[in-house]
Length: 326
Image 1 (tube, one colour):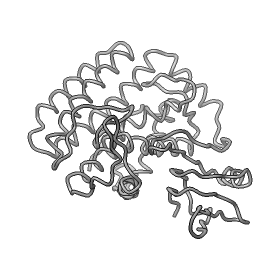
Image 2 (cartoon, rainbow, N blue to C red):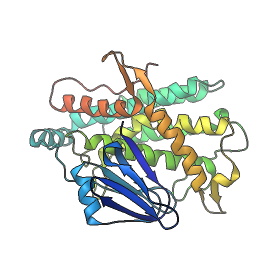
Image 3 (cartoon, rainbow, N blue to C red):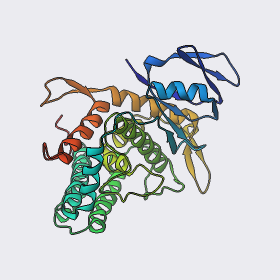
């Protein structure tokens, strides 16, 4: 079974025949069979030579790079093999057609707000926040442009985050969402978790014929894969936030899991490892799929969302965002 490989140490990745190995600056070499790797996440300072990069490209392995603070910086994506000129044209047509774009953009917001409400229903005294999100979802259905729609999504998310202090136990408080830089542990967890979800979505998009730079809710811009941002909206409450609730409410995080100062707060290496352990457990969790009639993992649910979008673009089936039924 293929798994994502996470490297926290500094060192060098090299190829040896039909496998790769990681040689840390201190310690022994570790070998990894290429057939067992789905994607690689680099958190340390790692050198890779072209021989190894060619090997990864031959095996369609994406490498995600994170900065010193553990946040997504970029990806090495092998030359696309799953290309489709027809699908690319359809993606662009749906972006340029206002009505088609608004439908898809609203669908991503609908899926995100559904999962926010679903999370809150698991906890007491969250009714007022659920009501506010419901109101914004109703307004979103009447929006005439993307800016209005983003406004509804933003207000709904503010209400959702306001509920975190009702949900979360212990000493960690959440005042407001701050990204650059995050200034308290909850913001650090949200930013780190969203980075992982974003890279997981990008990995699944790469396995399809979708072009990750053409999006509908987020504006396509240079130097970013905005379709990954669109699809991530549906999954962030379902994956990132439920992990945060578990880590905090079960006292799984300590002070040493954060690197804090007056103006910033980031997860330390121990904190990142704890989060990634829960992230991988969540991604491997399976659910009986009602339509397919078999168990599928959270990771494959992301791929299915890509396939549903492709069917919509090709006019085979109208896209409906995932709404968790379990």
